[in-house]
Length: 264
Image (tube, rainbow, N blue to C red; front, side, top):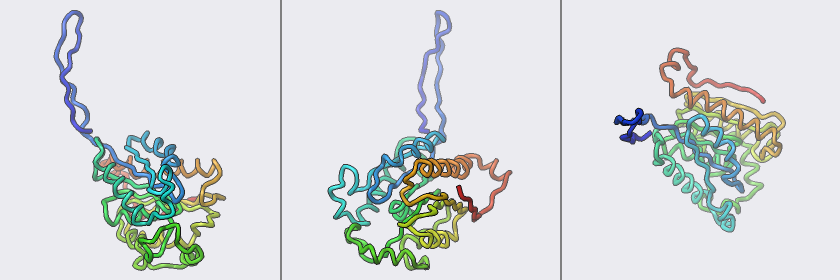
């Protein structure tokens, strides 16, 4: 935290002695939550609070064209929303007590797609993606809602080299820790999309893959929401909290670029 020394008086019976309080100098990690298309910041508040309880500064926000600005949803573009994500990132990075070199980004669906691209234009140390979507690079400035759905479905079934998609190319350059979560019965973002992301993260320091058994894309059942919250918190404890203890990490050892699969 920012040093804010304070001179204080300490009562000792009928007299006083002077003291100076010196607060900790260590800043905290920042965690940015990016919701999906037609979502809002409220959807991530429970997870943001869980992560904040680990000692991090969490920020959730509404993308333009959502929540209070939903009347603009038919005209908002991916470029507009990426600008939102960058602005939210900068707000968090500059927030008092936040370590600007220790930022994590948690993105879901459309928000996962935008979060992936963010890593190519801003420093991100940790990246968590749940059911990250994919879109063609074409029509970047076209309203997102007007994209051809049939073409999009067909595109998401393809095996794509990282160099052919802006989000995947950003993932291919990412060297931090990654959590990649998919739903077993996702009809919006099929397994082929997750496979493309998984392949792209060849340079990641660590890649943790999880499958939520029985879940749909929206995590429409409470148990699926709870499962995602639990695994996100577990991952954050492992890669973010543990990063505060470099000596302990060096003693225990770690597997760089490891790939771990687990269904819950």
